[in-house]
Image 1 (cartoon, one colour):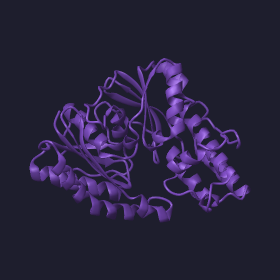
Image 2 (cartoon, one colour):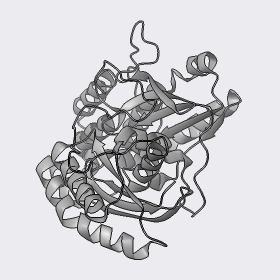
Image 3 (cartoon, helix red, strand yellow):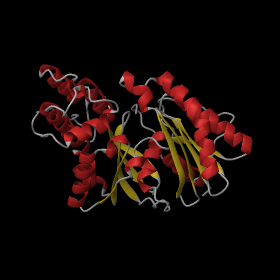
Length: 355
């Protein structure tokens, strides 16, 4: 493999990383836009694009100055994501690769998340991917189970409506506990009773590996408003008990929705490993429950460093290395970004459903 510069600008994180020929992370830099978007309670696409334009040149310069050798190829997130944000990264990467005569590889953002658990931020080489892995990707925009088998990827189940991370953000917004919602709900839930509030856990008939979060999210918001708890999380002093109980109950319901398919998935596909990635994979309860359920079924569970659960460029660089080793390169003069269509790395089977 080649020493790779990775670039990630799919949403509200500007990230640049360099990994060596063994997949060891040499440098991983990130510029967060949380403060810029927090007043709006969510990501503003136009603002995200402008922030990427400001941050990316400085991040790249700092990463190159810290690299242990010359960069030999470039990998960039080309989709899915916010189209304006993606274009900033794609055009920067294309110009950099073209100007230096380096190979360029377009990376599927979800493929990046899938390989992120195999990276080591401590400087060690990337772990080799086992022959058969059940992988959960759960973030603000995506919630799916995948089978990773001998280099191929196949989606086994997905959300039919909202993503898990999006649901966390919306409930947190109504509670008034801040943005992003996932970490705020996680912190509150550690002091609440997960059985205090009864919330629905709907399943999809004839699709046991799919899940739905819209009804769960709506039920939580109704409970907040019916119990006069809207905005209560922003009050001065310690959080009210009902806020912590709702947070714990909602978190427990989301985690159960994500993990309910696991026993049948393990029985059907017999994985040697289970992984989780994406922003929701930083959640304390999800990490504990997944580890416990994996042990109960005799399957190794590999979770990424929490710093790799957010959007990051190390996972993009590593995914690009894998694709390049399999024979893929992209023309920097013709590369474009795609907001919704998932890029198909080697072995990825195209799905008819929208991700």
